[in-house]
Length: 464
Image (cartoon, rainbow, N blue to C red):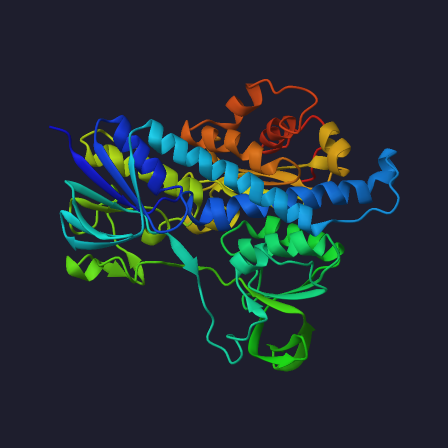
């Protein structure tokens, strides 16, 4: 008899879990209250990158004179940019729907609430009770709120609203210097918006190797984006059609005027209405608590993706979804939570996997660092004048690759090689002896590996 699986949430964790469970022979129902694809596909990763791609084309044309591309009367038709974004999103949503159908997954459009460990109440056009052997919670996250005076003003927006602005804003204050804040700063800053980032912490991008975060901060500052660290927001008040943001930086209080304020202080698990209390599912710090197999304290109920708070990235949710489905259906599941790439789609791009240098120091183990500036790479010179570098952290004794950090063009694609290298416990010598095609930016990966032992070929030896 087929096992029955209910997946609540159709984002990158949920729909992948549903497909994997169906592949393994289960009878699968997926419940999604909105569109399949979740936040990532509809209100996050994909629409953001679609807008960023249009902006990158604009930047390339705007700066094209040095490459012999001369353009007159260059402008952005924001309506067309937004229309293209929606076309891409719609096509991908339809693709996900098609995949679910092709795998025999029954999709229910509406809300879901757990009744007991084997039953879920579906509420769509009518109510229905669905039963299952296993329940996989993939309910995702929502933008975190800030509790300051004026945070509820109409000009104070979140990332969802920022994706759908009808016109390019003249000015924008972004509260939060994390990944979301930096990507929106790069997006709007490149097309003429006056952007100021306000970050409470001493540096932007917490969790990212400090050397790369500092280098990206400088690049964005050189592009005209103002970045204020060690700064907090006291209040927001209306001022005509815009707002005034009162900030405090080390006791120095001043005001910033802007058309909009974008709150980008992170995301929180969206678990308030799924019925966790019905079966007393354990919650810790606002997130569903799970073990290494993504089981909650109720063993046949799993929680994956943003709602468990382990790693709020779409590709992590998908990997967790596969692992949870496999474990539930009696298969050996593998999830390498310590090797999850992080990608930031600014210009230049930033990507990282494995240990930062700060983490390597804290671990107490001996390590070496190799850095290769992309100014020494022909393809990078062609693409962005050689801005950026690759940094590899390796064990001192055996040369095993502990972490790789990339700032530069194609960084978000190149990081896959680094993730695979760490997954296979490769050494810098093995990375070096892997022949990389020329001319490519990937050649710089081997050069950075050589630099761990101060042997980079296309960069002068460093004085030790």
